[in-house]
Amino acid sequence: MNKQDDKHEADDEQRPGAIDLLKSTLSAAIGVQTNANRERDFKHGNIKTFVVAGIVFTVVFIGTVISVVNFVLP
Image (cartoon, rainbow, N blue to C red):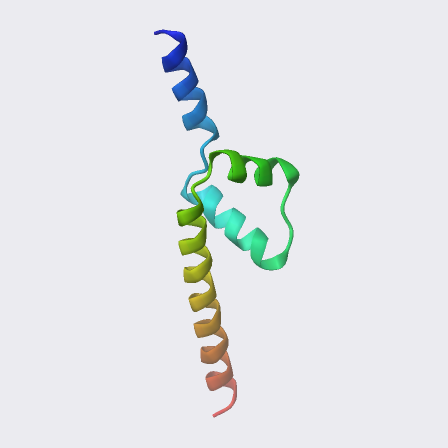
């Protein structure tokens, strides 16, 4: 393996995965994020995936709130 292969492997290790994306989205929703995770997201994350995750989270959150209110108030 050469230096370029090592660099790509290091990038893959730092690139946020699905669980990291979920954690970052939930952290953003409540306003708490570690500096290391924030830097990882900005350096190695894709803006499109974070926007889509944010929209999906918002829709699920609103749906959950509406469902709970409809359940509590007959």
